[in-house]
Length: 211
Image 1 (cartoon, rainbow, N blue to C red):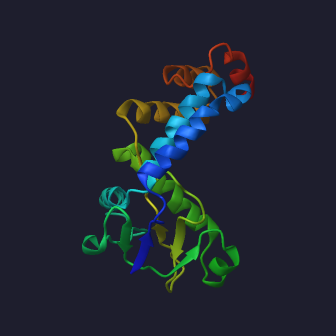
Image 2 (image 1 turned 90 degrees about the vertical axis):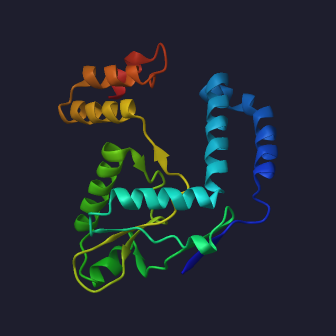
Protein backbone atom coordinates (compact mmCIF):
# COMPACT_ATOMS: atom_id res chain seq x y z
CA UNK A 1 0.00 0.00 0.00
CA UNK A 2 0.88 3.69 -0.19
CA UNK A 3 0.15 5.73 2.93
CA UNK A 4 -0.40 9.49 2.85
CA UNK A 5 -0.07 11.18 6.25
CA UNK A 6 -1.03 14.75 7.02
CA UNK A 7 1.58 16.82 8.81
CA UNK A 8 0.55 17.33 12.43
CA UNK A 9 0.62 21.13 12.20
CA UNK A 10 -1.72 21.21 9.18
CA UNK A 11 -4.94 21.46 11.17
CA UNK A 12 -8.07 23.37 10.04
CA UNK A 13 -7.56 25.73 12.99
CA UNK A 14 -3.97 26.54 11.97
CA UNK A 15 -4.95 27.12 8.36
CA UNK A 16 -7.84 29.39 9.37
CA UNK A 17 -5.46 31.40 11.57
CA UNK A 18 -2.96 31.83 8.74
CA UNK A 19 -5.74 32.80 6.33
CA UNK A 20 -6.96 35.49 8.73
CA UNK A 21 -3.46 36.98 8.60
CA UNK A 22 -3.47 36.76 4.81
CA UNK A 23 -6.83 38.53 4.59
CA UNK A 24 -5.43 41.42 6.63
CA UNK A 25 -2.83 42.06 3.91
CA UNK A 26 -5.10 41.30 0.95
CA UNK A 27 -4.96 44.99 0.02
CA UNK A 28 -1.40 44.39 -1.22
CA UNK A 29 -2.86 42.38 -4.13
CA UNK A 30 -5.16 45.27 -5.07
CA UNK A 31 -2.97 46.73 -7.85
CA UNK A 32 -3.07 43.41 -9.70
CA UNK A 33 -6.47 41.98 -8.82
CA UNK A 34 -8.68 44.67 -7.33
CA UNK A 35 -9.93 44.56 -3.76
CA UNK A 36 -12.95 42.34 -4.40
CA UNK A 37 -10.98 39.96 -6.59
CA UNK A 38 -8.22 39.62 -3.96
CA UNK A 39 -10.78 38.61 -1.34
CA UNK A 40 -12.30 36.08 -3.74
CA UNK A 41 -8.88 34.56 -4.49
CA UNK A 42 -8.15 34.16 -0.78
CA UNK A 43 -11.60 32.69 -0.13
CA UNK A 44 -11.07 30.15 -2.92
CA UNK A 45 -7.61 29.33 -1.57
CA UNK A 46 -9.11 28.79 1.89
CA UNK A 47 -11.75 26.41 0.54
CA UNK A 48 -9.17 24.45 -1.48
CA UNK A 49 -6.72 24.12 1.42
CA UNK A 50 -9.37 22.87 3.83
CA UNK A 51 -10.56 20.32 1.27
CA UNK A 52 -7.03 19.10 0.57
CA UNK A 53 -6.32 18.19 4.20
CA UNK A 54 -9.50 16.08 4.52
CA UNK A 55 -8.29 12.68 3.35
CA UNK A 56 -11.66 10.97 3.87
CA UNK A 57 -13.13 13.42 1.36
CA UNK A 58 -10.24 12.68 -1.00
CA UNK A 59 -10.89 8.94 -0.74
CA UNK A 60 -14.58 9.41 -1.58
CA UNK A 61 -13.70 11.56 -4.60
CA UNK A 62 -11.23 8.92 -5.82
CA UNK A 63 -13.90 6.22 -5.59
CA UNK A 64 -16.50 8.36 -7.38
CA UNK A 65 -14.21 9.14 -10.30
CA UNK A 66 -13.12 5.49 -10.42
CA UNK A 67 -16.78 4.46 -10.78
CA UNK A 68 -17.30 7.00 -13.57
CA UNK A 69 -14.32 5.61 -15.53
CA UNK A 70 -14.74 1.99 -14.50
CA UNK A 71 -15.44 0.81 -18.06
CA UNK A 72 -12.14 2.19 -19.43
CA UNK A 73 -9.34 -0.38 -18.90
CA UNK A 74 -6.74 2.25 -19.86
CA UNK A 75 -7.35 4.20 -16.63
CA UNK A 76 -6.29 3.04 -13.15
CA UNK A 77 -7.46 4.51 -9.84
CA UNK A 78 -5.80 3.09 -6.71
CA UNK A 79 -8.22 1.33 -4.36
CA UNK A 80 -8.88 3.05 -1.01
CA UNK A 81 -8.34 0.93 2.14
CA UNK A 82 -10.98 2.45 4.41
CA UNK A 83 -10.00 0.39 7.46
CA UNK A 84 -6.69 2.29 7.44
CA UNK A 85 -8.02 5.70 6.37
CA UNK A 86 -9.16 8.73 8.40
CA UNK A 87 -9.25 12.49 7.94
CA UNK A 88 -5.48 12.70 8.44
CA UNK A 89 -4.36 9.36 6.93
CA UNK A 90 -5.13 7.94 3.49
CA UNK A 91 -4.16 4.37 2.55
CA UNK A 92 -4.27 3.26 -1.08
CA UNK A 93 -3.10 0.38 -3.21
CA UNK A 94 0.51 0.90 -4.25
CA UNK A 95 0.92 0.81 -8.03
CA UNK A 96 4.35 0.65 -9.69
CA UNK A 97 4.52 3.63 -12.03
CA UNK A 98 6.55 5.88 -14.32
CA UNK A 99 6.25 9.66 -14.35
CA UNK A 100 4.16 10.88 -17.24
CA UNK A 101 6.90 13.38 -18.22
CA UNK A 102 9.76 10.84 -18.08
CA UNK A 103 10.01 10.42 -21.83
CA UNK A 104 13.22 8.30 -21.85
CA UNK A 105 11.66 5.84 -19.38
CA UNK A 106 8.47 5.62 -21.44
CA UNK A 107 10.42 5.15 -24.66
CA UNK A 108 12.49 2.41 -23.02
CA UNK A 109 9.22 0.60 -22.31
CA UNK A 110 7.97 1.10 -25.87
CA UNK A 111 5.27 3.57 -24.77
CA UNK A 112 4.63 6.61 -26.99
CA UNK A 113 3.89 10.00 -25.48
CA UNK A 114 1.11 10.45 -28.04
CA UNK A 115 -0.68 7.31 -26.80
CA UNK A 116 -0.48 8.55 -23.20
CA UNK A 117 -1.75 12.00 -24.15
CA UNK A 118 -4.74 10.46 -25.95
CA UNK A 119 -5.75 8.66 -22.74
CA UNK A 120 -5.31 11.85 -20.67
CA UNK A 121 -7.49 13.87 -23.05
CA UNK A 122 -10.18 11.19 -23.22
CA UNK A 123 -10.23 10.63 -19.44
CA UNK A 124 -10.58 14.34 -18.70
CA UNK A 125 -13.20 14.77 -21.40
CA UNK A 126 -15.28 12.03 -19.83
CA UNK A 127 -14.89 13.49 -16.34
CA UNK A 128 -15.75 17.07 -17.32
CA UNK A 129 -18.54 16.36 -19.80
CA UNK A 130 -19.84 13.16 -18.19
CA UNK A 131 -20.73 13.30 -14.50
CA UNK A 132 -18.88 16.59 -13.99
CA UNK A 133 -16.67 15.37 -11.14
CA UNK A 134 -13.05 15.69 -12.22
CA UNK A 135 -9.48 15.43 -10.93
CA UNK A 136 -8.55 19.13 -10.77
CA UNK A 137 -4.80 18.90 -10.12
CA UNK A 138 -3.28 17.41 -13.28
CA UNK A 139 0.50 17.67 -13.11
CA UNK A 140 3.39 15.23 -13.47
CA UNK A 141 3.36 14.43 -9.75
CA UNK A 142 -0.25 13.22 -9.93
CA UNK A 143 -0.47 11.53 -13.34
CA UNK A 144 1.62 8.44 -14.11
CA UNK A 145 1.88 5.55 -16.52
CA UNK A 146 1.53 2.14 -14.88
CA UNK A 147 4.91 0.35 -15.02
CA UNK A 148 4.02 -2.97 -16.63
CA UNK A 149 4.99 -4.99 -19.72
CA UNK A 150 3.48 -4.16 -23.09
CA UNK A 151 3.32 -1.08 -25.31
CA UNK A 152 -0.33 -0.25 -24.54
CA UNK A 153 -0.13 2.26 -21.68
CA UNK A 154 -2.48 2.60 -18.73
CA UNK A 155 -2.86 5.94 -16.98
CA UNK A 156 -2.68 6.14 -13.17
CA UNK A 157 -4.36 9.00 -11.28
CA UNK A 158 -3.35 9.86 -7.71
CA UNK A 159 -4.11 12.77 -5.33
CA UNK A 160 -7.80 13.66 -5.52
CA UNK A 161 -7.65 16.41 -2.90
CA UNK A 162 -8.71 19.01 -5.47
CA UNK A 163 -11.49 17.07 -7.19
CA UNK A 164 -14.19 19.48 -8.36
CA UNK A 165 -17.86 19.01 -9.17
CA UNK A 166 -19.04 21.11 -12.13
CA UNK A 167 -22.62 22.29 -12.38
CA UNK A 168 -24.71 21.24 -15.42
CA UNK A 169 -24.73 24.88 -16.58
CA UNK A 170 -20.93 25.13 -16.48
CA UNK A 171 -20.52 21.79 -18.27
CA UNK A 172 -22.84 22.99 -21.04
CA UNK A 173 -21.00 26.30 -21.36
CA UNK A 174 -17.68 24.45 -21.57
CA UNK A 175 -19.13 22.27 -24.33
CA UNK A 176 -20.30 25.34 -26.23
CA UNK A 177 -16.95 27.01 -25.59
CA UNK A 178 -15.01 24.11 -27.11
CA UNK A 179 -17.38 24.14 -30.08
CA UNK A 180 -16.85 27.91 -30.54
CA UNK A 181 -13.09 27.51 -30.19
CA UNK A 182 -12.95 24.82 -32.87
CA UNK A 183 -15.07 27.00 -35.16
CA UNK A 184 -12.92 30.07 -34.34
CA UNK A 185 -16.15 31.87 -33.43
CA UNK A 186 -14.94 34.69 -31.16
CA UNK A 187 -18.44 36.15 -30.71
CA UNK A 188 -19.82 32.83 -29.42
CA UNK A 189 -16.83 32.34 -27.13
CA UNK A 190 -17.18 35.84 -25.65
CA UNK A 191 -20.92 35.33 -25.20
CA UNK A 192 -20.30 32.15 -23.24
CA UNK A 193 -17.68 33.81 -21.05
CA UNK A 194 -20.16 36.59 -20.41
CA UNK A 195 -22.87 34.13 -19.34
CA UNK A 196 -20.36 32.67 -16.86
CA UNK A 197 -19.45 36.15 -15.50
CA UNK A 198 -15.87 35.38 -16.54
CA UNK A 199 -15.27 38.74 -18.24
CA UNK A 200 -14.07 41.75 -16.27
CA UNK A 201 -16.60 44.57 -16.82
CA UNK A 202 -15.23 47.14 -19.24
CA UNK A 203 -12.50 44.79 -20.52
CA UNK A 204 -14.49 43.05 -23.27
CA UNK A 205 -12.48 44.70 -26.07
CA UNK A 206 -9.21 43.48 -24.54
CA UNK A 207 -10.64 39.98 -24.15
CA UNK A 208 -11.72 39.99 -27.80
CA UNK A 209 -8.27 41.10 -28.94
CA UNK A 210 -6.61 38.41 -26.83
CA UNK A 211 -8.90 35.72 -28.22
